[in-house]
Image (cartoon, rainbow, N blue to C red; front, side):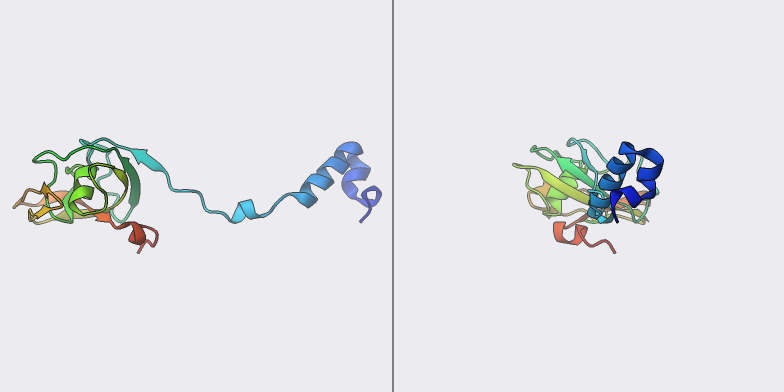
Length: 149
């Protein structure tokens, strides 16, 4: 269609030509791309409970842990972990990141459990908790984080 025959040109003159060119050449791929997941920076003390995430069962969140070191008492459970556990220390315990380098961690929130068993894994000793706790989370392996359930 010639520019002079376009309704935009008849109504808006040169502005109509500019709008016609912009609309006819605008890339359409942007509308099909999904947004990148938001990465939240946390420290070695941060737990899902600190972030008020309890009750968002089934939701996944992506965190960036700095390099550091887990301290005793930061992790309760062996997966699932209580939502009062350190996200970064639980990720080390689960073998998803290394303390020396830190890295990206995906967690999935879960309902509470009747009890949590402690264990030693990747140089982190998790604690047991023998009563009901109202919120939990799982550390999701990197390849599984790309494919939610």
